[in-house]
Image (cartoon, rainbow, N blue to C red; front, side, top):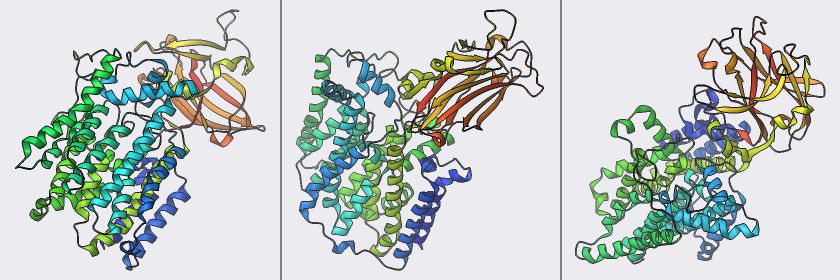
Length: 604
């Protein structure tokens, strides 16, 4: 029964994109599935239901009888690295664009964020410098580091599976469970600061388990743990669990071993950065510019904040509900605490979850999900280890649909980010998004046909119906270049659209100079004409009487249906409902043709 419910729930989540297809947006962790064609979504759901049915009938693949040849483990890491590179992501999230700008045009001495990820920054600038003579871009350098981190993670996963699994079949469960994560996106050429630290933190966990199992010494645990902290301080939350590695009879020597190994990488990193002339961080307004690193308890428990954190956890660990049930259930069982490995993993998961729910992030979590990707592997390993303590029959029934669901979820997540360049433009960072710009429509205004051609008044200068100018919003000083178009005006631009995905990013607005002049506002329309057939793509009416309309507005208009075709792009401004064109001064701000697909999931 548990397996059937697990499979059915997972199939519904996959088929409906977590409810997004039905208009429910509470589970944003599944929102990426709206970019998966619906036949593929339904096929994923059907595959999961089929796997569930096989499990319910007792038809299992007897994994316990399948033992991969040891030599295949040696090929797994380089093969994984090749796959990570071939399926590199095209969608950048968080501060990725800012990171690339700093790497491409600045120096490590001028980077204000170095001390937030010291060793990661040092490696990124070094890799960028090494690739630059060969024509490599900063994105290639960071992607290479991401793939390298993924290979380390795969090696650590295989090591953990050999340590914890009692049977070959369990090894496969551990391997699949640890690879089928939203956090796995970090290995696919991910451009951010979290790939290396996540891999190093998990490698520390693998070595810690190896020490508890008598397979490796203690000093590598401290060395790699310190390396992880040097890459990004978020790894500090994984270190308290290492105290459980200390033997009561020999704890002073062991503590010294851990400390000495753990301090090596941080000290060398600081010396290297200072040797390169990197100034110390400014601490007057918090750490490296952050005046609040952690939420207060009230902020962390705010329903909206808590829902975002749970969504983020579900994204990086697709089987989060199962791990919470099995993990917390195992915590209540006194015999489990006699197992040193379970105690270590529980303490590790507690530290990671404390970070996940308490760390303050400036960007919205849907955009900055990867800041918490480090939680996925450790939290999942804790749940897997607790899961393996169940009775074998129950474990198998639930394992079948659960692991299939995790694999389908992860393949969909990685596939969307590889296949699409999803862009969520932010007007305050339009300089960063300029790298996606294919064409600034203002440069083609001379080629446009304007209707009507008559000026708006008798003056020879200053009465053009359509002209290049700029508007400045008085409330915040936001100035943008615009194609001025006093209604009624129809601008028809001949264009040949690229074969790749593209969209328009427009900022329609009423001229602030005319806000108090009366009139019933302006209706903005965007259309495309192909072979004499005109199709309206977007429309919106703005009125100066509405305070909410006295600002820049954003229009993100996909042009996928016209890829590679010659079209006439039509920007029209029309008088309001009453047909009154008095004071209908309007403009199309920031008229850019952009590469990629607009991510409008969070635009309201």
